[in-house]
Length: 440
View 1 (cartoon, one colour):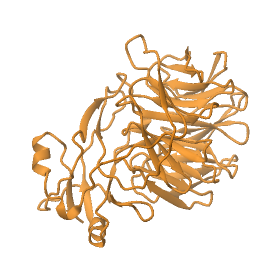
View 2 (cartoon, rainbow, N blue to C red):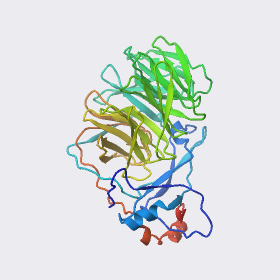
View 3 (spheres, rainbow, N blue to C red):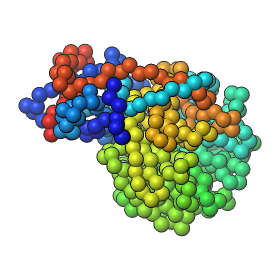
């Protein structure tokens, strides 16, 4: 196994295949490529709209292979979601392991089924947050409902007044109520702990609001994925919007930073943005190209930590704009949600990997397999009971993970470049999408 010296193994970008370049097959897991149906006809969440991807590749650690890896590129054909279509995603499961793992003990994962929408369809659970009432609150994008689950696992649900509103992000407000975005309804919603709703229309049409977070100024701040703006709403319902400088940036995740500003991810432009409560915006380029920054959370070290859904990394940026990146052991894991835990670590979901990850502020990673296969964990938050709670979009469940479980021990074969000219024809004959390598 290659143990990375700093960030991890070499990053290889996707480029079109060039004729006359010798193909090199990747040594894939037996179930390396498969088509999965997205739960909920007509539902396509914003995090699946990415059209670029990258892959991590590790050699055997020799200087020869390290040099070779820096001069190779890789081509990969993938399928992506389209809005309003019963979409399918081409998921590539574990390929390489290139990051150290440390042991932990005494942990468990519990899962709680969420009622199906109209008794048949997945409700497409998305984001989750801790409420002021000691329960967890979550959004059901496919069912247009807000859900509540107690720490004992008792679930209740409340239907959003606007039909097909697509509730997505959710956060506890300073007023003791829950605030959420309506991705399809173009609104920000509010629900009391007793289930009473209020809704506020966003000025920009088709703004596609995504994540939402409480700000240090007593207001709620949200990212407008379709509007390329950052929105602000007071607890009285007064709305204002601020333009993101980069065109088609795709602002997505948002969190309050230790510096009194709001920090957000730019999913399409591969940047991390910062906005003051006065509306001044600055941007910082993520080192990895086509990283697809997704969720973001403030860490106990004063920095902002974020997931790279396409880059397969966890990123860290200081309030001064200095970056670090850490490779996730499971390839193509598609990290999405992230939250700070009570143990001083950051916890994140691996959507494609169906795992929960943990990263210490020193950069050491653990991974834990969700019991239900193809669970597609998405949102995650720290609960009032000291556990981490997460949504399982693929199987319509809410999961709970406690601290201390032994991490998975991966035995994924690592590609070694000098010995890799083996499997291309076999993979193609088996119907797999063929990955080819070529010299740049």
